[in-house]
Image 1: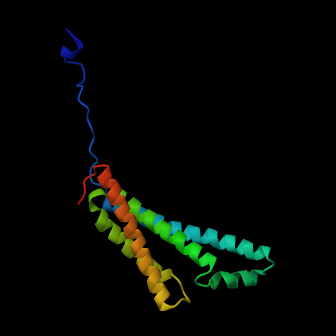
Image 2 (image 1 turned 30 degrees about the vertical axis):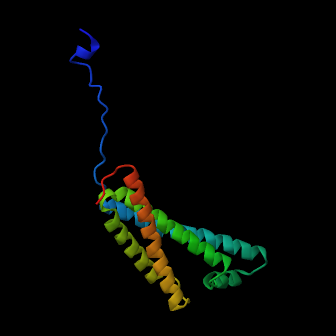
Image 3 (image 1 turned 60 degrees about the vertical axis):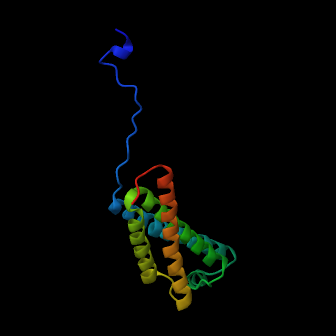
Length: 162
């Protein structure tokens, strides 16, 4: 009896496990954790760096606290903070889409809406309404851009889509 005729030999066919649909709840929770949690963590680190830089120039703790609460739009620290926040929003949207699979856009809209609402509730005090609106639109758009990137990656990997 040859090996090909042996009934105990495993088949030669290549088998590919098809991933099932992801969990939309897990996708939303991960997306929010990365977006909001990452943005908060980056803001803390950026504020600490800014405080150290101000202290190195001889600023008093009171001056550092005042400067940290009144960051001018257009300053390097404001632009860096917004870029970092948008980066975490894109990453959160991307991870949400990758995890959600078929329900990527629906899950992504939930992440974008919650992130935008969080930004509206706890966001930039002391800035103009126009700037706040622009930042909220940027947050929503950044999350959805990340979702689009995740959907594109899912399609490239032949994952099921909605």
